Image (cartoon, rainbow, N blue to C red):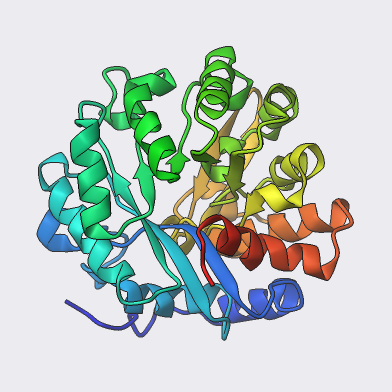
Length: 330
C-alpha cells in the first residue's frame, strides 16, 4: 500500500493548465460533493497505470485532488464504489472510518435494491453516514433500468424519515429527457419532501441537449439538487443554473475519473468518452496531450458560470456553500 502519489504522476502541463485556465476561477476552499475512495482488501482496486496506489484513503485522496486545485482546503462527500457486491458491507465501513476522521466530511451508504429498510436505517445510523448511494448495475436491467429498479421507493421513504440525501446516477439513453426518469424523480421528490435527491453528473447531461429538453419538467422541486461531477459540457451546467438557480448546483470531482485523461463529448443524441489512448490526439497540425478529466470538467464549469454571469460569491456557493448547507457542515 502506498501512502503518496506516484512520483511521475503530476505533469508540468497539469500545473500549467491550472494556472492558465483555472487559478483565478476556483475559490479558496472546495467541497467535493462526489468522490470515491477504495480499499483493495475489499476487491475494489482501481488500476489505471503501473504503480498506481491500490488503496486510497482520505489523506491520499486529498493529495490527488490537490493536483486539480492546488492549495485549496477540501472537504468531501464520499460515495462507495459498487464493483464488489460480496464486500459491500466492508466498503461501507471503510467509507465510515475515513469520514469519521474529519467533521467537515460526509459519506453515503451504498444500497442494493433488495435491502431491508429497517436494516439500512440502523446501519447508516451506526456508521455515522449521511445518506444513500445506489447504482444501476445492481438492477435486473442495466442501461435501460427504471429508477425504482435500483432505488426502490421503500428506501427513499427511509431517507425521507431520516432527512437524508440520495445521490442518483440515472441511466437510459436519453437520461433526464426520458419520461420514465422524469416521472420517478418528480414522484420521489414530491412524495418524500424531507429527502434531498442529488442528480449526479449534472443530471448525467453528457449530451447537454438532454438537459435542455428534460430539465424543465423537473422545475419547482425544492428538494432536487445536482452535482457537476466529471461532466465536461458547459451547457449541461448552464441549463441547471438557468432553470433551477446556482444554489442547486454543487461541484463534484468524481475522483477517480477526474484523474484519468480525456473528456466527454456530446454527439448525435448521445455522448462519447475520449480517453488518453484514443487516436484523436494525434493530429498532424497540432501536437498536444489530453488534459485531466478533472481539469476539463472545471473549465466547463468556468465557462458555464461566465455564460450565466455569476458573481464571485455565486461561484463560491457552487464550490462550498451549497454543499455545506445541504450536508449540515458548520
